[in-house]
Length: 237
Image (cartoon, rainbow, N blue to C red; front, side):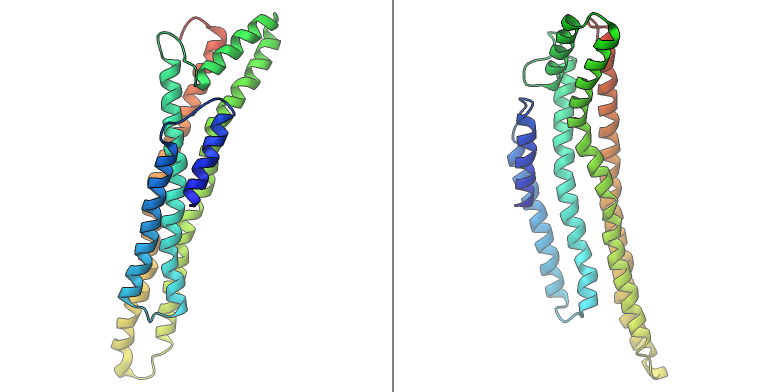
């Protein structure tokens, strides 16, 4: 439901520019289903594995659910950004010029309008820059927000790490006789696994998403440079 709501907001933002990404709602529904099944599967797995775990251990396990939920939400924004960028790159590189239904078409129309309205280059550049910024912000701002919010994902893993270390400390405090040492050390293994495994899962989710985000931001910057070049070379790509 959260991803469907996010997909609806993305569609509404596109409508302000007369844009439409095919099958975006279906993509949101599919990613939402996968994310929801992943979160539910994690909960069921731990319930079957050990339903008698204490509160601290369950808090640590909850970090897996947080990582799965955040990853699914960010992935939807990245998929939408990828599809939007591919549409704009193809539209701008088309031999017959950009077609209706793309920001590239709006950008070219705005530039031609400013050329007719403003004779001085300074005025043209100021107005044209404002138009380009508006279109680039539409493409780039969601990616910048994702890059900022992705920084939280490793902290979800650190939540499990802290809980795992706390579990180990509790087990150490229960050693009362030498004969119990090996039993307690065996119990500590669960906390150690939780501590390192949650961090590993969070980093494995964070690194590919961050790499993809950076790649898409670079493509937005390249598109912005191409649009700027059109100002001085209106008949060339």
